[in-house]
Image (cartoon, rainbow, N blue to C red; front, side, top):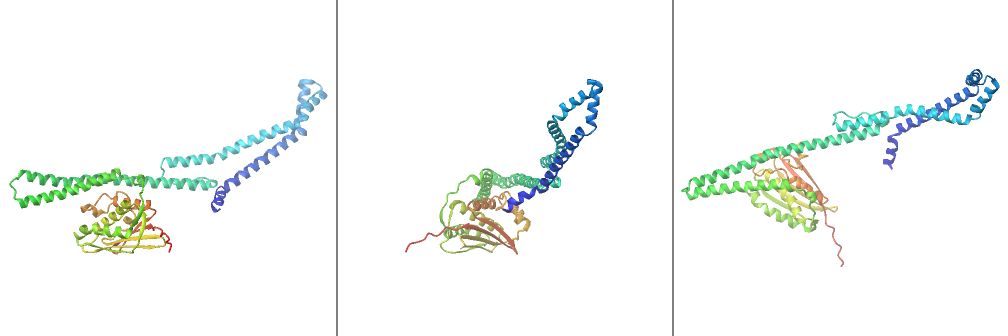
Length: 383
């Protein structure tokens, strides 16, 4: 109802001006027609016509007067109608010329959008609603353009990072393999050491190539969800156990607190990926020898999962962009765990596809990721 009232009041000033202008046109036309009528009946026009006919046509005033009556007085209704229409159209033409300026202003506003002008569009007060909408569209397009430029810059940075990240392990692999080939009599212990290093670098290279393929092919919006009832508590236990080797390498541990009988209707593979991506991020940015706390609980039909780690505080301006594709924290460049910034973006899309939300908070060297998912409705049991 309010929206309808808003639409009616948007062009109230324009409707008022249009009504006033139309009223003025009708009034002026009526006055002019009355003046024409008076001029024809009682004015000098009648005498002028009769005198002209008497002097140049009939030479008889009675004949001239009869012609005047036959042509003008007997057709007075038609002449008045013709005069009224002519006067109305003439005034309306001039009025419409002033009215079409609004369309010219709208066209100028559209041109400003096309030309991506930095200034807001200013229209006549009667078009205030149109002015607001044009400027709103202009700002939305500007924001999208800026977002596109930022995404393009991130992709360009990604190409530069990729060249560096791939070249570094590849150079090491080539160097160690060349050394092994050039020195066949190398001691077995040293050879084993170089082979181990080469294998680590090759595995790092494989991970980078896999992420590159992920960037090229991943489009979650086209991937259907294959939902089934999942024991969320058991899934979190499994994932926590799987991360033990990665966490123990830096002295980190994972502590899980999850209620029993937590079930959700979800795609198990994709939901597991959400938790893997977030835990991988937590492991990469946790201080050594600290705990990563994982909790899950149900309330008001929703299940809330929180993953919390101790590490560098994420600035507020970066916290708002960590779920965007190709975003990476600056210090990810110095770590082998630094990826191409897809993990959290993919996690966000998966959670949204499941009808949930994902948020992040960071303060006082504690970063928390909170996921909410619709809980599985409990089926009633008959006793």
